[in-house]
Length: 288
DNA sequence: AGGCATGTTACAGG
DNA sequence: ACCTGTAACATGCC
Image (cartoon, rainbow, N blue to C red; front, side, top):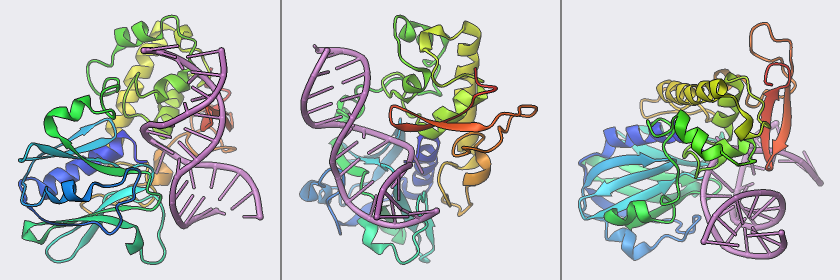
């Protein structure tokens, strides 16, 4: 899926588009997503107003004025499509170039006042949409075990030190672990480790203090940069303004197996290995 | 044709 | 009860 930056961009788009609007109708062409949609509960959201939109990790939270929250997770291929009154369409994320019509992947349709339509579209159906009582959201199974947000002050040097003590976990696995830090995925983990000149296979407790500080600042830097770029880890990404994200140019190590290391003055070649069954890219020359 | 894919989680075993 | 590794989920691209 979309990782933290993409979800943040979607959240911002939602905020701009549906804040203060009233749900006029809900259609459910397919309720079999990761979790079966509770149709009657979903329909009870009709006539409610969007009071705020938040993000926690990779989860989007649309709070309604009826004390319920619509939780959306985009899985790997979920996207949100907006249609305005003039029927202009904007996709917020886009993994596959869908050649023919992609209507068959439209699973849930919200119609708001002002003729605004919001469609949840998901090729692989790994994502989900759930209705949860707003005051129970942070106790829900999805959110209650999550670590700190990587862009928060809680994610700092002493937190890192505290949590790697006596652990034999590999650096890559540590950053992928949502209990340690919430919202990073395979792409930005690869990028942040590359930027820090660390080897993804290093044992986390053996990283020097200096490198830990560098790593933390690089994680924050790449996420912020990606958010500003408009959420880049998506092929053909379009945000609400219709501006294209740029999948190919943005990354310095992800997906670059057998290509030259992008670090200036480094003659290394990017290798691809698997760590915990996930593709891991690194330059064996400059990432020690 | 077979391998691969940005995520999460249920399960088994330790 | 915790941690860890594996497989599964569904679909389409290369």
